[in-house]
Image 1 (cartoon, rainbow, N blue to C red):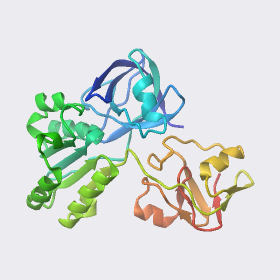
Image 2 (tube, rainbow, N blue to C red):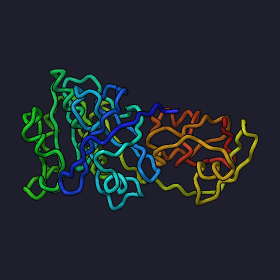
Image 3 (cartoon, rainbow, N blue to C red):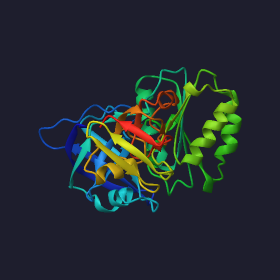
Length: 317
C-alpha cells in the first residue's frame, strides 16, 4: 500500500480565474516528505476519487505540498471536485510523493509548459536555480490574466529565467521554438508538460532537430486512451478464477465484479498503481507508464487501461 498522510488545507486561492492553488500542511505531529522536482502526489478527494497532481513549489519549502488544480470541464469528476469542493481548513489524505518526471544532469535544461502544465516545471526551475544549473523556463498560454503563477514568475527569484508566450499578447510559441531550438546546445535536455497535442508538437520539433529521445522528457497529466477492444479472458492464477473481459469494460472492472480487488489510483495508465505480473499471453499496452522496452518484455500490465492481444491472459493475482 502507498504511504499516506493527513493534511490540512492551509491556504486556497484562485489564480488566472480557473486554477485553485492549494497549500497543504501536515497535521500536527506529522512531517511531510521532502519534495523532489517533477514529483506528484495522489490526492484523495471528498467524492471518493483519487487523482494525481504535480507538486508546484520551491523544494526548499519543508512540510508543505502546493498544488495547482485546473477547473476542467472535461474532467471525469476529479478536477471539478478538487476545484469546487476543497476549501481552506479542510482535512485531506495524500500519498507520499512519487516521481515519474525526474530531472537529469544536463549542461542546460529547457523547461516548456503549456497552461496548467507549468506546475511541475516551476518546481524544476526552483531546484535548478538552487543548484546553480543552467536553465530556461517557458510558459505558453492564452493570456497572462487567465494563467496561474504569473505574478510569482514575473516578480520572484525565477523572473530572470522565465519567458512568457501568451497568444493575446501577440506571442507565437511555435514560431519561437522553431527558430530557437536550432541554436540550442546539443547536450541540452528538454522537458515539456501540457496538453497532449502541445507536448507532441514540442517533442516532434525536438526530434526534427536531432535531439536524442533520452534528452526529451514529458509529463502526462491527462491521457486520452481508448479502453475498448475485443473480448478476452483473464486467468487469475492465485485466485483460481477465469474472468471474461467484455468489449466495453476494463480488466480492472471485470476483476472487481468477481471480487478481485486491485489497488488503483489514476485509472488512466499514468501512475502504475494497478500493475500486475503477466505469466502468460501478450498484453495490449495502452498506458504511458511503462517504457517501450518494458512494454516489449510483456512482464507486467496496468489493468486500468490495457487489454490483451491474445484470447487469454494469465496474471499472477
